Length: 326
Image (cartoon, rainbow, N blue to C red; front, side):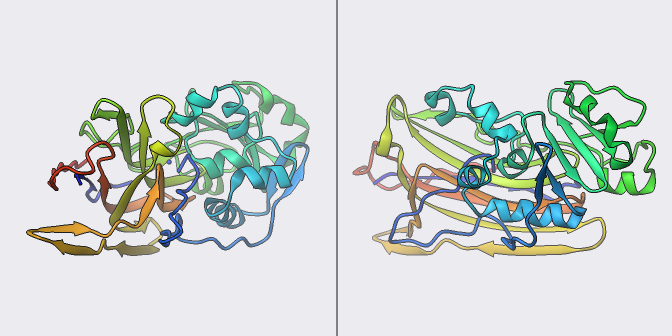
């Protein structure tokens, strides 16, 4: 059996999961994908857009969507989201090997309509990933809502914010304008070759990718990690591998709220080697460490992914280690 370890680190940076949660072997227990699955009050669908009653309502429901099947949620609500509309233009193979969406946050992209619009009362937002702009229209000017359907909305009452802005705070302070206050930094990915989510080929007929990333879409910020394993070509269940994930994190919001947690992989002795107890059998894994509307003052996240080299299962055990920091 051949074992590979990938270690990724994000160290105290001031400050997406875009695919479905891993399906776990019946013999194992999954790690929750998010810190809170409390549903709270459901939003209402009016005029083709979801309406949330407040910033807190919006944040709580985004976290709830992290923990459920968003395809089923859309079907149950007879809703076509920005996410589904984008994926409908791709082939099955393109979807299977997709590394990033324009709005690479499945929960956020699920509540946006096909024009990228959602209402968090009293504001109606349109997200445009091509220019990283959040357009905002106050419900006092609801008669102008058709302007938001344009790719680049223009109108007297439409306000513009960057994806890097702390939009809800800025709107509260300056409801009729824009200031330059932003989150401390924008998207974070690592500098190492295994850290950017691109697939790495190995053993001629297999590949894997890993992400540890902070993303900001103006009205939602997210820290998450992904691991994907694929057979090159038509793999089916050959895509699956046994793996285990070790992680720890802590973060602090600008308002002082903080959270910390960890998960340790269990090891067993095999001759002269310590080998991990593999917790998963799948081709995808995703973990969300932070998903909220507020900027972070600081965060630290470490992830280790242990997986079995699918084409060399009878080879001697060895460990390779690579570390990435940003």
